[in-house]
Structures are given as C-alpha cells and as structure tokens.
Image 1 (cartoon, rainbow, N blue to C red):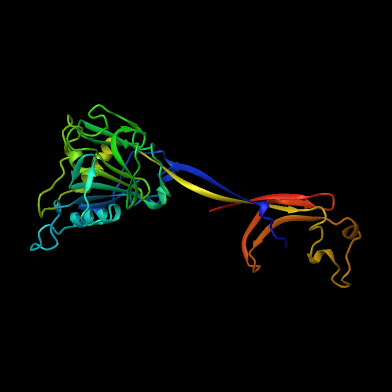
Image 2: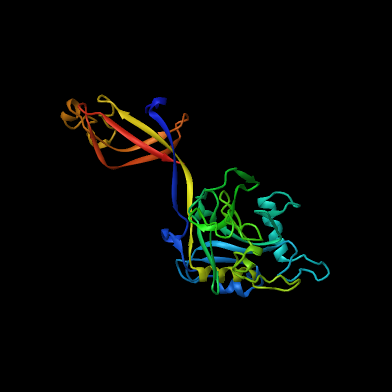
Length: 337
C-alpha cells in the first residue's frame, strides 16, 4: 500500500451541457398529460407533462404546469365562506415563498406587476444543476396567434437575484436572441415581459396578462379563465397552446468536479504476488525459478483507501497490464463528483 503524493492529485472543474428532454431529444414537440390526473380536480390547475402517452413504458415526466392566481380566481374555493382561498391561490403562495421568499412580495414582470401566471417547473433530474441560458426556444400558439420566447440573458446588464437564485426576464425571441418588434426589451406593449426565467431552480413563469393580450400587443389571446369560485382549465389551456406551438428547446448545464489521481508503480514495485498459484501447496516453495529471478504480475485493479485503511473506491483496468522489473506503470484515475 502506498501513500499518494499531493503532487499526484489534480482537481479539474468543467462545465457540461446536455439537452433537458428524455432520450436526448433537443426539442420537445408533443406534450402529453395523464388522463387520470386531468380528470381529477387537481388537473384543472396543476398537470404533469410527458414526452409520450403517460401509459407508455418509456413515459417520463418532463415538467409540471401550474396555474397561479393571487386572488384565487379560476378555481373553486375550499370553503365557500372563505373568499379567495382556493387551489390557484395556494399555488401562487407556494411559488411566491419559493421564489421571492416574502409572503407580501410581488411578481413584477418587466415593469408590470402580475397577479396571475403559469409556472413551468422542469423535472429536477432533467435540468441537473441549472438551465443553460441562451438555449431556450419556447413557442406558444393559439389560433393564428403565436409568440416565441427566450431568456434575456444576452441583453441583461445587471445580475438580479431572488430567493430562488438568478432571475431573468422571459422575452420575445429564440435561442437567446431577443426580438424587439414590439418593445426594445422584447416585452409586450402594455403587460411588461412575458415572465421570469429562474435557471437555478428550473422554473419558468409565464405572465398570464401578457399571453391573454391581443396579437397587436404581443399576446396570443389565451383567454385565461379568472371567474371567482369557478373552476377553469388553467393548466390545460397553456399545455394546448404548447402543443399547437410544438417547439420547446432547452439545455441543462452542470459543473462537474473531477479529481485525477496519478498512480505509479516503479520498476522494483509490485512484481511479486500473494496469489497462491505462485507456490506449491504441499511444500510452500515457489513453483518456478522464473518467479524468483524474473517475476511477472498483471495489474488489473487499483483500490483507494483512507487513512483508516477503509476501501473508498475501486478502479478496474479494461485489460490486464503486464508488470516486471523492466517496466513501470503510470495510471490516471478520474473521479467525478
């Protein structure tokens, strides 16, 4: 057993990117929901979205869609005597606590204070550490009206933080390129930006007022139902508009910390073995003279131990490596975290 020299340990940090969706698909073009969930009461204001039919063997949740309303509109009250206390208001409060961290805080989309929005929450295992900025291409379409959305990281000059980490505006554009047809910032004409992008928690907020606006104002006439104490198909309306738009491109990004260990076996080291096949079982003598004067071993495995000699990791070679007095071995072992 040999102690590693600190010079033989090197740490490397790399940024690794990949697509978010199942099967490494760069773009999601079809959006499926569970008929069981949709038929239930919760499906009106919260739905999971799959890349294929939810009953298929390879179906996996890609993201969830929630409808959130500060006034509790668009869903029936829990108690008719308690005005506004409803599932959509609960959703609003949960996202406010998570993102803003203040129960009295407001969602200001650009220069517009929004009281209702749709939340897309990417499955945690898909966006890994964070959403990769500048890769989003989200198309929302209803009838003949369509908007293409991306984040404004390419033009945002000041970093903004919320309790949920970095915050960027959701604006008109594609793959990080901002469209300025309606507004120099890529916003709507009267309802601010299209929402927020929170890359560190995998959440995209869509400003309901922006989507409900006319095509001339930059919206798609989504027609969010905001009647008090009345269920509407909030999350389904957005999912239908996603299916009609049929483009959702997004990449993930993670920082991968790798530690490289350089393991050396000098020419005089590790040329003998404790393998019982080296010696006679009856006399205990070495079977062949060559094992004495010209021993050979094969390196197949390297074990890494801590100071208490507890085995922490094992590295296996793809093929046995011959070792004798005329050879030295240098192995590089990579540990990813």
